[in-house]
Length: 502
Ligand code: UDP
Image: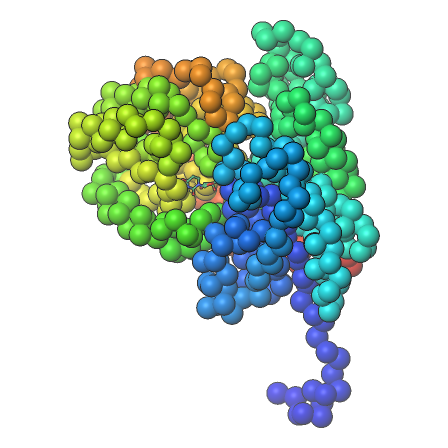
């Protein structure tokens, strides 16, 4: 140990890198960025998560855990301006609270008004932060970063496979081509290292309905002017698409996932997303039920945080699970239960008929804890990237039932490239809610679940590959693994030279 005099003469250690993280106010976007913030703090950086008060309340568990474990992770709450745009009803601060399709754009426009408060918060800090990492949908952070001279990375939630299709599609006018095409026409996505075909319905797409053009343009522009991208994936899963994406983007792409593996105990897993909804208590009920089941025997069924099914669509899913004869754990959203009085009664009757074999969770489920349980052997998913990655990271193969946005291309990745998915067979997207079309009937569910959970070479191969990717995912996140080392490099490069990837 140096003497006091020698210590005083030593140069002060450089301050830790400080990352300001600005997620989009949607569960599928916030959850991985919270994992990222915690990981950064665990690795010695300072992380400030910027969100609104309602979303901050959902993260109370994360904040408390950070205090308990002495992590440099803080939640910064910036109130949403009250002069909301285009009649956003008061109290709506998250995409999952929206009940009217007409309220999405006003919510996005209102969130953009956080630019001023964010800039004020950053200016008031004693030291300039090292880097802003903001969701690619938060294009309004670009101007803030620019005016303060802070480097900015965009966080892109989907797979690099999707992101590459999307970027190549933009560069080659695929959006315009598919928009003008008829429904059956097939297009090859240009510049892909593998053959990928899309139709008008399955073409890459966020923000591609009328009214979203301005926001879409701003988001693409903000990606182009960023200093790089952070993605929730890992090299051993989709390395060829990561390199092609990095080349097409012309800037560093930091693969840091699967971020979900930063939740190392069941309490952390169960409080993910919304601590205020009693996830930890529910977790013990669900775990006790799963404990009674054979290894890899249960099919888990859940469609993310947004997609909402009407009663007639729910009933097809329920009948399909009943007819499959397999043990199942099915998540039905509170809003779906509340949509009609007969739903609750119908679910109760289903549970009675399948007692001991089926469990219906109503509301927000501890998904990550469920997928990590040894009894879960398959997952019927809407192909949101978080859900797919959480499944793959735990060696669980999937039935793919894409609903919208990036999900149809994520399906292509897991079915055609990775070989861990069995398609339910949908070919067209649905609206987030109030879509009358019953695209999937009970027979489709029975067929897909049997293909996934049954015997035979194809099913065995899917399971074998999923287990292999699960093992590789864990290796990626351990010391010496690709994502672990990329995170080290990210922290170091922003401390020393303003964000260059070595
Ligand atoms: N999730 C959860 N419980 C639920 C529903 C969703 O924990 O009942 C989590 C899920 O684990 C994932 C995220 O919410 O981390 C959903 O993200 P995804 O990209 O799969 O779909 P999105 O909600 O964006 O459509």
